[in-house]
Amino acid sequence: MKKEKFHGYPATKSYLNFSLGPNTSLPSLRLPFNSLISTPPAIHKHAARILGLDSKVEKSLLIPFREIKVECTIPKDDGTLASYIGFRVQHDNARGPMKGGIRYHPEVDPDEVNALAQLMTWKSAVADIPYGGAKGGIGCNPGDLSKSELERLTRVFTQKIHDLIGVHTDVPAPDMGTNAQTMAWILDEYSKFHGHSPAVVTGKPIDLGGSLGREAATGRGVVFATEALLAEHGKSIKGLTFAVQGFGNVGSWAAKIIQERGGKVIAVSDISGAVKNPNGIDIPELIRHKESTCSLKNFQGGDSMDANELLVHECDVLIPCALGGVLNRENAADVKAKFIIEAANHPTDPEADEILAKKGVVVLPDIYANSGGVTVSYFEWVQNIQGFMWDEEQVNKTLQNYMTRAFHNIKVMCQTHDCNLRMGAFTLGVNRVARATLLRGWEA
Ligand SMILES: NC(=O)C1=CN([C@@H]2O[C@H](COP(=O)(O)OP(=O)(O)OC[C@H]3O[C@@H](n4cnc5c(N)ncnc54)[C@H](OP(=O)(O)O)[C@@H]3O)[C@@H](O)[C@H]2O)C=CC1
Ligand SMILES: O=C(O)CCC(=O)C(=O)O
Image (cartoon, rainbow, N blue to C red):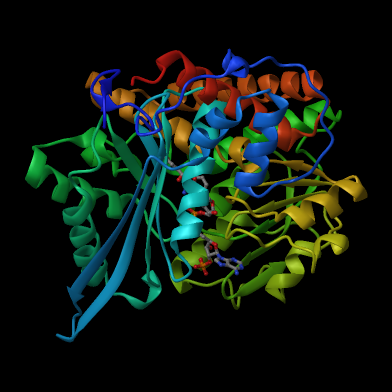
C-alpha cells in the first residue's frame, strides 16, 4: 500500500505498518560510544542505538524500499547472444528522490548493490542534500565489451528499469566502469519513453546538460575533505606524501589536484600494477600515459611495484579509489599511512577498521570523503530543473562550502557521542534520515 507525498514520489516503507512506541520521538543526541563496527548494516544499527531510535524505526531504515533485478540479453558484435543481470536497489526516499551510481563490474552482486544503496542514503544525508539513496549495477566486465555492446547493454537495462527511475523518483549517475557516455545512453533511452528529461541522470556530458565540474567532483571533494581533516591535525597537503589506489575517475582527479596543491603523490596503482617514485610522480604525465596505453605499465617516470604493495607503502596519506574491502585483516596491520581517506566506497572492512584504530591511523569515512560526487550531481540536477547553468567556479566553491560544513557537522557528532569519524558521520546521516522518516509518519 503506497502513499504519495512530497512532490509525488512515494513515501518510504509505507508497507511497514506499526505503531510508534515511546522511544520514537525525535532522537536524543547524547549517548557514549566506543565501538568500531563498520559493515554498513552493522554500523547503521550501532548509530541507531546511539541515537536512541526505536528498534522498529531502525528496522524500517535498514530495509530497502525496492530491489530490482532484471535480465539483460544483447546481441554481441559477432552475432552471438550474451545475458547479463542488472540490479537497481532503491534504499530510502524519506529525504527526497533516491540517488546513486550505476556500476559495471564482474563482481556486482545483489548484496553489494544493497549495501552500496544504503551507504548512499547516509551519504546524501551527511552532505545535507535533499536525496535518499540508491545504487545499481550490471555484472559484466566493461573492458571485455566493445563500445557498441556497452551501448546495447545500457539501453536494454534502461528499457527494463525506465518506469522505476525518474527525475523525482530515482536519479542514476556514474560509478565504477561507467561514465558520462553511459549516462548519455540512459538519458536517450529514457527520453524515448518519457520525453526529454535531462535531470533523470547526472554525470552527463556537458553537451546534454551535464554540470561543469561534475567529472572532477568526487576527486575534488576528496581533496577538500582531506584538507579539512589535515587542518584539524595542524597539517596541510603541501609537503605530505600520498599513495593512491585506482587511477580512474576518482583516483586520477584526486591525484592531480593533490599535486597542484603541493602534495607529493609517490605511488599510484590500477589493475595493471603500480608505479612509485619517492620524489613524486608527474601526475599529468601519468594521465597522458594511461590515456594512450590504457595502463600504468611502462611509465618512464617511476619504478613499477606490485599493486597490493601500494596499500602498505610508506606514505603519510593513503587514498583507496578503487574497490571495496581492499583494507582487511590480511594487510591492515602493515599499513604505514597515518591517514586513510576513503575515496572508494567501503574500502575498509570492519576487522581492518579495528586494527587501524588500534594503530592510531585516522580513517576519514567514505560517506563523507567521497560525497563530492553526489553533491555536484545535486548541483547538476538543480541546474537542469532551473534550466540555468552555473559556471565552474560557482560549482567548485559551493562544493567546498558543502564539504567544509559537513566536516564540521561530523565533528560535532564525534564530540557529542565521543566517537570516531566513521561513527560521527553515521550518526549524522542516520539522525537526519530518521528525523525525516518520523516527520513524514506512517499512515494506517
Ligand atoms: N565516480 C564517482 O563519482 C564516484 C565514485 N565513487 C567510488 O570511487 C571508486 C572508484 O570509482 P571511479 O573512479 O568512478 O571508477 P573507475 O572505473 O573510473 O576507476 C576505477 C579504478 O580502479 C582501478 N582498479 C580496479 N581494481 C583494482 C585493483 N584491484 N587494484 C588497483 N586498482 C584497481 C581501475 O583500474 P583500471 O583503470 O586498470 O581499470 C580504475 O583505475 C569506487 O569505489 C566508486 O564507488 C564514490 C563516489 C562517487
Ligand atoms: O553522483 C551520484 O549521484 C552518486 C555517486 C555515487 O554513486 C556515490 O557517491 O557512490
